[in-house]
Image (cartoon, rainbow, N blue to C red; front, side):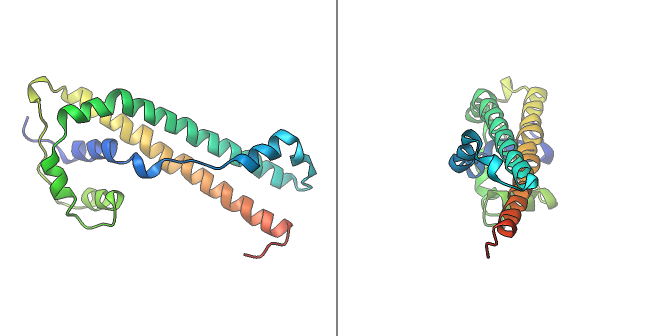
Length: 172
């Protein structure tokens, strides 16, 4: 098993590298005070009340997804990394263009370049299980949270800020 596909390497690297910079920690003290005190009823705009509720849901969805990511990472990904990671690949990968790991991975994904990748302990390596685990984590865990839930939060937050500025005549 010396020929490891670029697709596997991409999934593998999404699974192991993309946790730290994406931890979402919303500051919700004011939002919670508004909801818990009943003060939302003082806002005359129904749209404003609705957006505050939507923002709360978006934050909860991100937190739920991050809990799933953390669980899968702790139970499956971290032990797998300890057993199998190729640090020689990482040295070459680090030389790719890009300011950070995200940019470098996009460059690698979109290029024809193939960086040789080896796995340790091949005698006990479960290729199908590993591919399924990395694919699940990459596509259903990380990308789902990063693209769907973060994007929803960004959109609702922007719309809410725009409406608050309009309703209360706040200049940017």
